Structures are given as structure tokens and as C-alpha cells.
Length: 542
Image 1: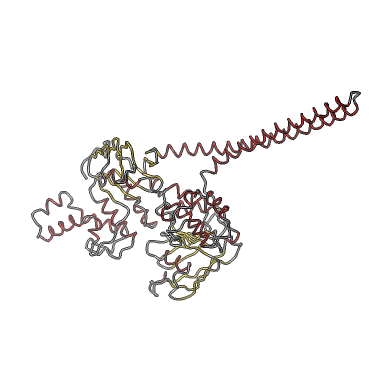
Image 2: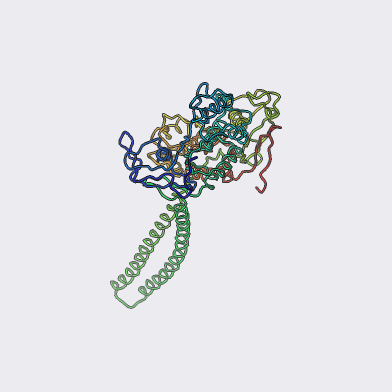
């Protein structure tokens, strides 16, 4: 790492604009300063978080304005596709220096090897130790990278970034594909890192460890922490306003009733007096009509006031409800207490060796329940969910799902990308009318424009909500949702909305990782992997 003062600015965006080839402007005259304070970038999918990261790193050039960089910047994007013949050292981006160090050790170095190594004489030992600390002790720089899991590849790429010697790291969704141990390792590496770091992430646990969060919005960039504080205050004020409007409505309705009864009695007295008064018939009619007119005027005045109160309550409620995604389940989606949901009897997961203690699983689940499946990358979590969904058969033993289920994998394969959501639900023989569907979808924040466009054109969060709607509003609604890492690739707002949507689901859930997400679901049990086998245990305190 070059010697850059910890007080200096590592990157500065000055009046930067970015426009795509088709003329669409993503950023227009934005400013941003990056120093050694760890910085998170959040925002809804499609608004340009990854583009902003690449502009900071220099992987993209602005259409106008400039980016000033003080030191070296390393850009580590989300995807690292396997390359035939690639080694672990190459995947980490360190093969050049590591190979030069090896040639120097063997005494066969070329003329430029010393220059290539520079001051990085300790890199080979640091890389070996780094692989060990990352849980990859069985690998070396010359190991084949082909066949490694997504989580293993992610850790190797991140290790290479931390050992790169860069002054500023730009990491795009670095915790995606990492298991719990991998995420702990990543946090430990970030705490030790002395340079600057920019994290594009929706991982709330990771974002808790940054000093600054910048949100990308359609209007530009803003301070996310200040925005959330303001948003929380606005939400609290909206809820208070709704409660006040409802209280005022109840109070005034009682007052209206008392006033109505009082005037009704007085009008009755006036009519009675008119009948007994010593006046002409026209005058008597006039007195009675006057009493009726007074009552009619009072009723109209009170109705206008009631309508105004109802409008104020509706407007106050709209300000509260607008921020919530509401998932309404069909009656068949519920699971009665103690109803058996699934059974695994000595079921052996496909592809695992028969001698592996964790290959077999015996487990019976009764609902309603919310279960988190936990274990390291490659232990078989996804295989288990696919087996429960009926996509895979156990190599041995029995696997039975006893209620209608839906498997929401990371690709959301149950959706037809060419269909609109309304068409998809119609093909699934939903019992709901189109009008009722649209009302329910609006509560999920899927408006008329979104439900009539091809599903392929929806954002990740919108597709996840669409898939959930298809699972629950089809002819035979799912009583068991099998969710495979549902928060991967979602923006933070979509994750929060999905949590809210699932909060009232009356069936059973089986999900895996993201501890903030799991906490929001209100877990009842955990299914844990270990080398000795799987264990099923209740969540204490529930």
C-alpha cells in the first residue's frame, strides 16, 4: 500500500454525470468525497449503485465532471465467472507476484521478477495464512479454482483484494454467497484493514460496521443515516396523526350524536307546539317546515363534517400504509396447530457419501413453524430444500412434504419471465378475480404498471414479491414456503418490505441465513448442520 495520509481524500467525485449510450442519464452533477471512513452505498435496484462503484474505481468513465483519486484503487465486482485452467492465485489476482517469489526462492528468477515483487517479500506467507484464516487451508496458490463453490471463490477474491496493497477497496455485495463463518471472516478482515473501503451492500450486519452510508436515489445521493432518522420521525408522526384523526373522529361522532338527539327533541317540541298553537293553518305549516329545515340543515352539516373526518383518517392511514407491503394469504395457506408439515426418515442427501454422518437426516416438522436452516457453504442446504420441494429424490430413505409447498430458489424459477404477473396468476388458476388481485398486489406495492409488464422487466424485489403472490394465490395455495437465501441480490428497502410482507404468513417457512432477516420472521426452530449430522432445536425465548 502506498503511504496515503489517513486524513486525506482517497477519491473525489466532482460534478460527475453519467449517461448511457441510449441517452438515459443515471447521475447528473453529483459530488462525493471518499476518505478512510468505511463507506456503504445503498439504494434500490436499478438506480446505479454498481455503476457508482465502478466510477469511483475508474472501471467506468463519467460523461461529464471528473473523479480525482489519491492512491491506488481496486474494484472487486459481484461476479467472478470460472475460467478453465484458472488457479487459486490467479483468482485472487496475486499470481504474478507469487510466481515471481517462487522463482526467486528457486534461484531461477527473471530480470524483472525483483521489480515485480517490489516490497512484497512476505506475500507468499501472508497468502498461505490468509487461506487458512478464511477456512481454505487445503488450498494453495497453485490449486485449481475450477469446481470451488461460490462461497469459496468469493473468499479467495476478497483475500486477494485485502492483500493487493491498494489504498482503496471498492467491494460490490462482498457478503453474497458467504456463509456465517465467511461473513465473520469478512468482518474480521475489514476491522484489520488500514486503507479505505467502499461497500455496495444490502447486508445490514455489514452496514452496521461502516462509518458512513450513502444512498443512491433518483434525485442523486443523500446521507442514508440522516434520511432513515428523518424517515423514522416522519413514520412516527404519520402514525400519531392517524391515531389523532381516529380519536377525533370517534369524539366528534359522539358529539354529533348528542347534538342530533338534542335538536331532534327540540324539533319534536316545535312540531308539537305548532299543532297546539293558536295560529292560522299556513302559520302552523310554516312552523313545522321550519323545524324540518333546521333538522335537514343540521344533518347536512354533520354529514359534511363526518365526510371530512373520514377523509382525514384515510389520508393519515395512506401515509402509514404506503411504507408497508401487506401479504394477504388465502385460507388454504394456513397450517393448523400440530398439523404435520413434512417428514424425513433416514433420507440421504443426493451426491453426499453414504459414510458422511451429515448425509442422512431424520426430521419431522409440525406447523405452524418458522425454521432457519444453517450451515457452511456446500453442506447441502439448497439440496435439502430442493428435496423437500420434490425436485430431487433422496438417495435413500423417505422424504415427504405433507402440505402444498412452493420453492422460491435464488433464480425464482417458478416464474415465467415472458408473462405478466396477472397472466401468471391466471395460468395458476387463482380463485381471485382480477379486481381483487390488483387490490392485493397494490398492497404488496405492485401497482397497475408493474403487474401488466413482463415479469422479466421487474426488479429483484418485485420478482420476489411476485413469486410469493404466485405461491399463495394460486388454485392450491402453498402452506409451506421453502426460501433459499431470499435476500441475496435484493436492495435494502426490498428486504425490509419482504420482511413486512411475510410477518403475517400463517403457514410454515423454511429459510436460510441473513440473521437480521431471520430475526424479523420470528423463528420457532433452527435446523443446524455439523460434521456429526443435522440437529433440530427450538429457538429459546419463543
